[in-house]
Length: 242
Image (cartoon, rainbow, N blue to C red; front, side, top):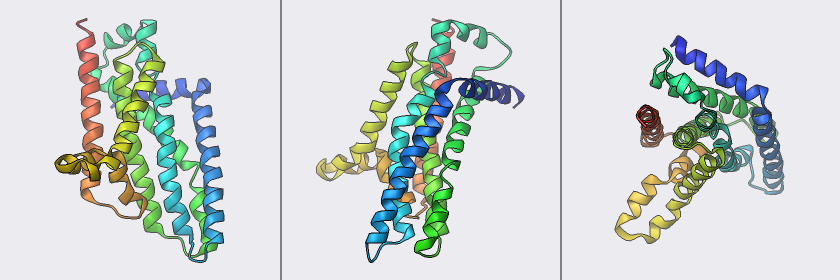
């Protein structure tokens, strides 16, 4: 645990001594705030609109924003060290490969939590439209955390397989976009429609954004994250023999 914490602390320090953390936090907060303002206008202009409706719309929008931004958080975690040659020093130290992978993942995950924490003011502003629906808020943020964990884990895997940060980021984004939109094909895909629907990020996240927490959705996200982290471990392990 101490080694994981050391790697995590080092990566968090790297984030905040560079413009990356500030850029991502500012962009995410600015876009989310603008969309939240629009959602409130729509809710207030609609006779049946409510704060819960505004938050449901915002949760879906924030998930889309994170689809674009999370590759920026992970693209350098291994790719930069491969390019600079410091990866050899890291992997030959007393820290195990698994500790390195978990340390880097938790660093990006903590930065993600900071980004989400900046939006916690939004739910309370919706109280002017009625009582705050705590179920929608809790499930919405839980869904964002689980979904983003998948984004971060896969982005970490792509970074471990490339020396180029841009390639790692674009590959991650392309994969996220495919799994985000693939659910739209499920109704036209015949017998494989159910499989496409199950693989879709959006299909699983939709329940969270509407205040519904289902075990199958949690299992999907946790399993996807675990598989990606395990694949990253194997990718780093195999690089020692190249």
